[in-house]
Length: 559
Image 1 (cartoon, rainbow, N blue to C red):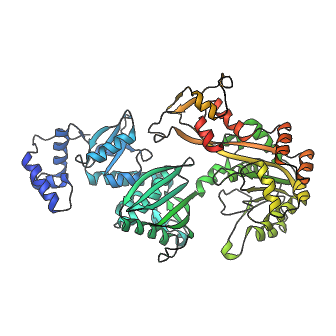
Image 2 (tube, rainbow, N blue to C red):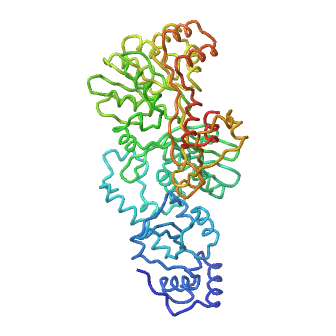
Image 3 (cartoon, helix red, strand yellow):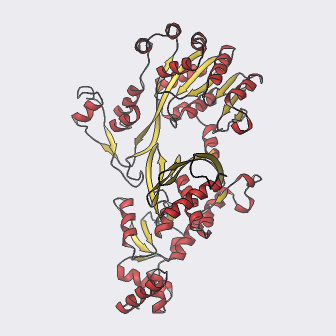
């Protein structure tokens, strides 16, 4: 319920005395008004709400509200003293703890888009209690208590909850923890901390694109934040001249999250990139993972299933970092895993956890490389082997030999398309005849952002856009072009979520002969097209035709 505003009114004298008190002491204007007026903070809040024409919201009503940390991240809520929340009727409110901070209010309203939430005033301490209560409800649903975090607590760098963030006295630790917490809430894949002259830029990679989140002012603060990341990753905080790599683990809402850390020096200090890996979430997804869930077109799905059903040989998946190669392999393995075959994987790191599959993590520090692990796997009587990535000549040669000796090998390699893979293996010293004999097929894939379902609308591309994409008006007569306008659900990007697009080349006898003869790429492309290869760009343009994405996104991903 909302308290009635008092008959008392704040006068100009109250405000003048409060501003003088703020100048003399480090306190907010609402707190100073309570001090000079002698009224309790709730009475001052109600009086301010009446004079501003806002609504006053107290704890009894806050308890029934639901915050939207995806729209306004918790880091920003913490720094700006505000939040966006919905009441039981579904109405959105902008909860402000300081009505005099017009910049914060204007920023939040721009962030929320139209129609914006209605402003309401709350007490700062009740806003913090509201955040803590939300976190406690999440822990209750997960059956989680921080005091019983697990047996491997020594491996966990921090247990992060909203309660722990609020109670943390160190501003640096509070900022780092809230940044990690927000990244998980927004389903970011990476956190980028970029050190600039006098400030630190915080960006999240969401749906494959970097999104600016906030800035932290001050060179000293920037250095302390990077040092905190180094401490968590067990890196040398005194060394600032060379790159460093490490990892750490945190526990957030009963989930153990792995972070891989890369520190890189620059002219202003050091940059940090943290890659997030939510093992529990990935494992839950893997249990029901199928190729259809990736968004691939039906011809690509059918071709990959055909390759995965082979009794022996090699299935290669290629693409840049973060293009979903490992997810595609796991989807294929999940579909063929019946329990009658011995399946062994070697990965760096193990991303998904599958039941009754032997999964081996690479550990370079202990001497367990892909090549050494793969040699040992072959002595373990496997039927199917997954090699997370082929990085060197030795691993490539062992993988080809394994495919030639009756094993089905799934693996990934970094290349731009299915044809570049051929040259990559030959340059790694693999015999051309052996490679062609072992190879069953190659999948090259990318991830396309798809239009936000909440704000997508029909659009008409102009002639210049069509020409840039190599299309004419006649080509697109039956196409349905759609694009996201940008809303609070997609954070103004116009896109929300991604789907995979792929080109799949099945290796037949004609292509094998051409590979052994080292035929020109142009001849290989011509023969592959005759064999039914649908190019990566054609698959992406099909998504445009279906209204799932835009020509701009296809150009960004496929060139």
